[in-house]
Length: 143
Image (cartoon, rainbow, N blue to C red; front, side, top):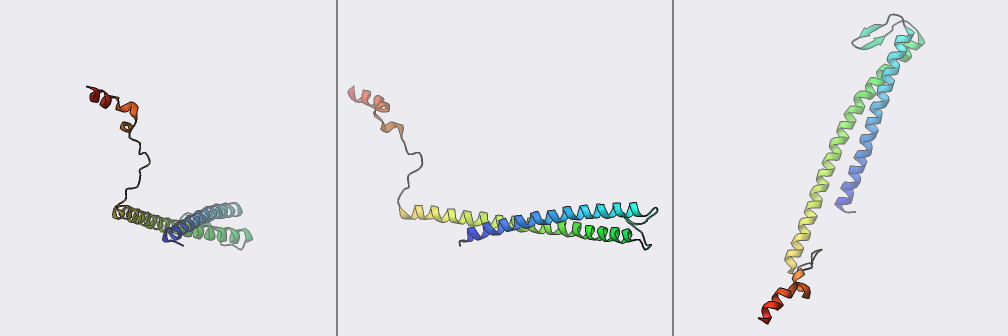
């Protein structure tokens, strides 16, 4: 396995992990909103901690709402953190892949220069080699 293949595989893996991190963020947002709605529907007058409602009386829905809020908030935070980590990780792999590609291109160009052979270009046709385009030179030779 070459270094380019390895870096390409690691970049794909980081892209996949970044997608999973953003899905974790999305699940956290759904849990968080569900927990807030659960708490607001169960209690008539909830207590508030910044933007998080909670209810302290022993109602089964209050415990469920608080657990959904806390798990949703943690998934939100971990999802964003993991997404940023994997995004930077993928950017680093792509940068190293670009360096490896440019080093390979430089070594190929050095081999071409060092061998003394000129490799044909893709469009190696000269229009002056055809007889129809050498009419001017033929007229000059006649005079």
